[in-house]
Image (cartoon, rainbow, N blue to C red; front, side, top):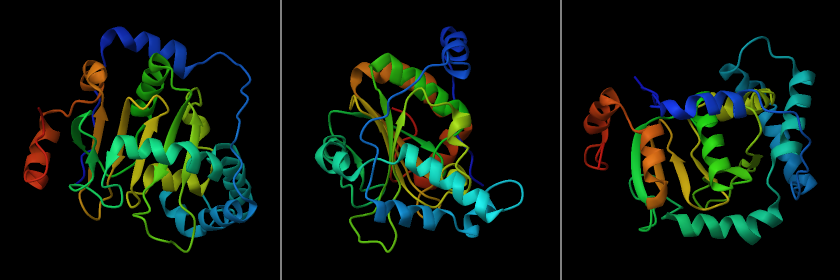
Length: 250
């Protein structure tokens, strides 16, 4: 049984989280450089419009409505190929080692502290809202979600998202079956990080080690360990299932 992360919030941040993130002020955003090639975008829409992914969602599957929801999500949040190749791919290299593998071989660069946890899915609402606060604190304009392709050519495109940090959790759930796949399907593996390059997360799938790995620079240690430190139950499961890979606490 997978035990998902229970986040330990610093009390002084709780009111700030509610006032600044859960009910943000209305404002307009100019999202730049989010276009990807029409061919790749259409492939991504075609893949995640499939009824197969509806098994992770709620309610009845309606093909036309779902396809439109997937399309709007992809058009809004997809990272452009040009930005990925020119900037984001290099940033991944500065943060992660052995990116074509998975845990335990994959890890953060030596300049980062690491903290593992029991996972299997991308993230939950309370975790995303904590990351919004951290992103604001660090000056991260966006939160990137990059599917690990293990340096292999795949028949369909990988998910590469650029999410403005003020985007609400509820907005991320409007993508129909692509949202269901992202947040409820424990099969793909993802890199999650902000454009400041001071923190990141690797999410492994249930098929290997159902583990996520946080990485952060030393100046981020207090806040990340306060928000995301594994509880005692998670520590026991980590020791039992992957004691040869990670220590549950440092």
